[in-house]
Length: 461
Ligand SMILES: Nc1ncnc2c1ncn2[C@@H]1O[C@H](COP(=O)(O)OP(=O)(O)OP(=O)(O)O)[C@@H](O)[C@H]1O
Ligand SMILES: [Mg+2]
Image 1 (spheres, rainbow, N blue to C red):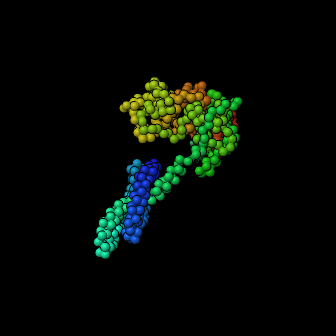
Image 2: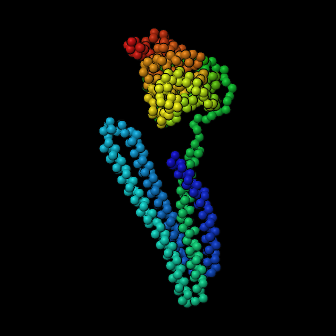
Image 3: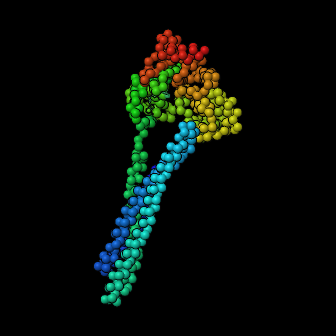
């Protein structure tokens, strides 16, 4: 954000003041020079000779000062980020006894900042005196040479005075040349960086609506493979899944097996490398984003709450204003209503940045309520009960069971929910489906699911 603001203001300096001064100075310089040359060519050439040096000095000093000030800015930003992080992570720093190390690091970076800032100040201290020196030099040369001419020919006094005035007139536009030139150079670099943002094409393109194809099933994954482009990790390999309207699907698997990737592909956060995903008979690549995403309610694995009231966080996805009744119903279905009422300001309680005022489990349930209030036909829950205790989990699942009775749902988890009866259970391992079936058939098969069930359910009882 800092960079963008800085780049935009540099381009603005170019399109505004720099162009204005450029027109101003070219007109003024041209008019002065024409007049001077008409009067006395030799004298003109002598008196203007220091002026190019003035322009060049200003140009180079400006570039140098700019370079240094960019470095000082960057160091300052490092320093403040470092300080901010140390404060927000103060509990971790203290519990790992790293105060000294962090302080040492802070000292080192503030020392570096100080050195660079002093360097910049020295540079700036040289800037104005050297400019004045060159300006003074031009006037001095004019007067010296003028005196010699006047000694030979006293009628030329007027000419010398005229030339001194010309020189004084020229000084500002000539110094502006250096300034405009360095400004233009900076603006060009800034515009290049801005273009990188402006010309960025989204990897996933929105499409206008097309006619639905005739496919059996509400959600269909057909030979889907996906590799994360940044890491090259093959997260999903030849994934096939058909979910009929009203079915409840459980996706189970070890951590890092590719469960969340399935949800990302369904919501088109990424496009698969191979294969296609269909929702309600339409290839999601041919479906406008808002149609797809309005149809699916998604509870992400990482809870994100906005620093706003609980009520506004719950009604976030609705385009119209939600009634209090509707918000409370959603909160009840997510088993958080009673806890919200216990808070000082109830539904109007502000949750703080990213929801810091709530516990992990409360945040998860507010996030669930936010998905439920949309009341869509398709729901995806990604490991959304990991931070609640077994009793609350059972309570939520009982509510969800009722809520989801006429809906299609995909539930992703590490744990087995016994309260729910699933139409299909899928085990993913390294991006591949290794087991699929119903609870009964998988128990008979005696694989990963049966083992997990034995560990989590039978042994717990
Ligand atoms: N944004 C990403 N960029 C690159 N690689 C990723 C990204 N997200 C996940 N991966 C990789 O893809 C693989 C599958 O990740 P995924 O998030 O689907 O696992 P998961 O089954 O949801 O795990 P968990 O149970 O821990 O949530 C992992 O190896 C992971 O490192
Ligand atoms: Mg995950």
